[in-house]
Image 1: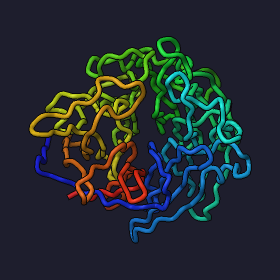
Image 2: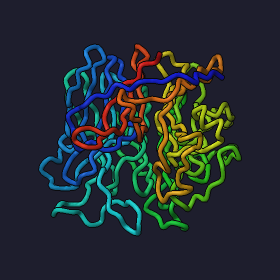
Image 3: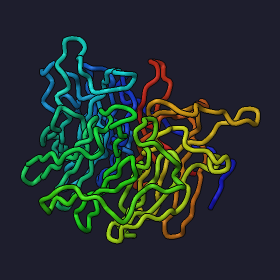
Image 4: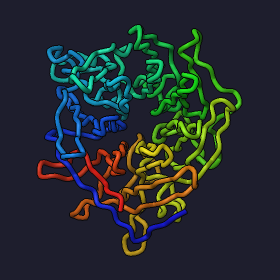
Length: 428
């Protein structure tokens, strides 16, 4: 373990030109051309999210599309395609991704899929699967999520051209065969998902689906800690793995019927080609673990939280945990953007004990962590600040360019108010 107690990283902030930009989850990736592709979300019912590209060579930002327009719904007069909640997957010069709703209706004290559209709009039509051609700039609509739901989670087998997604709020597992264009609804994955009744059939849904490229199989978790497998190459139902689960004491103890955490779900999971296993992080506890699909084994590796969090013994302040978790260009270094406690006059600022939905329990610093897999070396590179001393917040995305610079989408105060936009972090 390595500590850099006096380290202090600086975030370089960029303005993409979208003054309504709201919190974005996952929708940030580096492509093979070295450019950074990302989406800024909108929570307004009439305003679509915006799709951008950043060129690290000259720091130019280009607007590529409005998501509603890209889905062919510009004149539909329906609730907009306000966000994307998934990473970009690259295959044969195209980036595959999907859209999600950004506007919610408060029903029984919770954010729900709108049942009453505002401003004479039609109800949300459902999220779309899209393919962006990096050479021509053309965006192809590959199909729509069934039941007028958004696309919450998505993974792609880029070798076999298969996409698997989980819908929000109900949690349907949906399979798209890109080669044929066929979309199949495989049924619910977790009771009634986040459309369920709290204390009964409510279950927080998995935000990260794993594809094992060696077999083509897909895996997802549940709030109860179960791991399920779906093989697109075989007709049949989703299968639960009987010899492994995520109900580990180190992760904490959760009531899966209650909101406010990811439960026993993994927060983010990635495939390590060099190791031939998956690495995941559990939200809230921040433990790094491996998952071997072939042997159905989960093993704890390290606590990946910030050094101040480790010393304080505290859980994540962002109750769902953090999605800024990715392998770097070398394929063997994990980069993780996580939180760290803030101290005033020697005392840690306490956050709320419990919140009704996933979110920040209290203020925290943003820390950049790396974990080098072959050497098992953990490094907390220190907290991240803007030049004026303010802290980037609500970070749930990450990308690393070929020069080792780290990118994220973060909230910050600007002359036009608080927005979320692109930041760049240069490791020292």
